Each structure stands twice: as structure tokens, then as C-alpha cells.
Length: 259
Image (tube, rainbow, N blue to C red; front, top):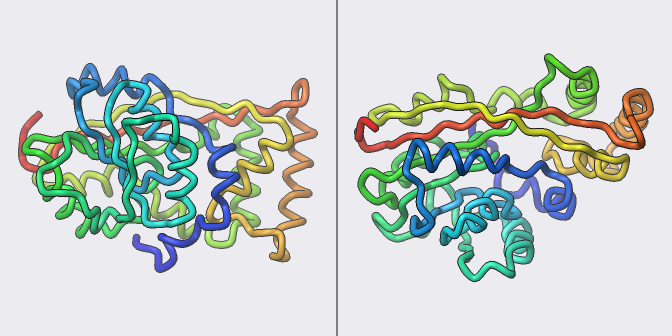
């Protein structure tokens, strides 16, 4: 589901996004090494690279990574975050128009950005820039609400106060939607557990980093923060709470290679 403001809506959230979003589980690399034969010499294009959280995982694996990010503020945040990595570069581009050369990359990775894409145009662009038999890896971190009461209480706050949370949530990638994107190719799925342990400051930053969270000038902001403080005080242990996640991973090819 494309959003008219998809390329701008994080402009005022860069600092919170960089500091408080969950990192991607290192087990993702183990999965890709095992199932796709990922090697350090492979070139990765991180599409919708944002502040560089997924890029860092591949850079730490020894890969060269090109971050493709349409939002100027987010792209600058990623360049600053990853300035110590000589194997990282970034370009102003989008999933629909990456600016990358034809058949130039081994992997396309997408972390927490797939729902912002025009998937038809992105599919065509990915086919253009991937080497034959190249891999697409879509990673989505979602909250696990079945097991932990705090995570469910946090979700309820998003539903009550989020500006367009339902619309965004309805666009989250699910197996059926991603399957249509890989139509004509082949893909596999996996789930990897993850979590964040947050103090009060970090919890506030985590909430503010969401594109649908009201900003300080919005009438929903203070009621939202009051509700957040209430659940923090109810569930904290030693000044911290734990948000439970799972990383849903979709990986496959677009060109009919039956891997």
C-alpha cells in the first residue's frame, strides 16, 4: 500500500530512530549463510536503508553495502552512524528507482521498509539491478504480544493514540502479500526471536520513532505519554521493561531460479 508521504514521514524522527529502534538479530546472518550461501564478498543493496541498522549487520559480516534511501535526513543519519565503515556508501534513491547499475548487486536487503514500496515498480527495479540468481531478503520486526503483557499494553497505546496506525499496520508485509511480490520466482520464510530492554528514556524514544506517533504539538501526544508512563510503572523491573519481537524473514529470487 503506497503512502503519499512515505519518503518524508521520518524526517523529524531521525535521532530517535537511530538511537531507539531495535537492532536486527545476528542470527539473520547465520540463516542467510546457511540458506543462501551469503559470503563477505557479496555486494548488498540495502533498500530504504534509513539510519543504517540493517546495513550495519552486513557490514560487520565484511560485506560492501550500498544504502539506497530517499529521505535526505534519514540518509544523512545513516551516513553519520556508519561513517567508520569504509565498505558503506549511500545514494539518494528509492525502491522504485534505485539509481544502481543493471545487474550490479548480489543481494537486495529490505529492513522494515517493504510496506512503503510500490511493489510492482519495485519488483521490476530489483530484477533490473540484481545479478542473475541474486537474492532478495525482506526483514520485518514485529511485536510478540501473545506472551508478554507489557508488549500487548504497548500495542494498545499505539492503537489508541497513533495517527494512522491502523493504515500502516494493515500494510505490514505478510506471507500472502510478499508471495505476490515474489510471484514468478521462489521464496522461503523464517522467524527469529528478538527483544529490546528499555529504560524510561529509551521507551519514550522508541515510541517517538514510529511514523504514526503524534509529535509534541499534537493533542494526542501528552495523553499518549501519560499512558506510556502508566504501563512503564506497572511493568518495570529495576527501572526497565522488555519489548518482545520476532524478525520475520522472507528470502528468495525473482527470476524463476528454483532455489
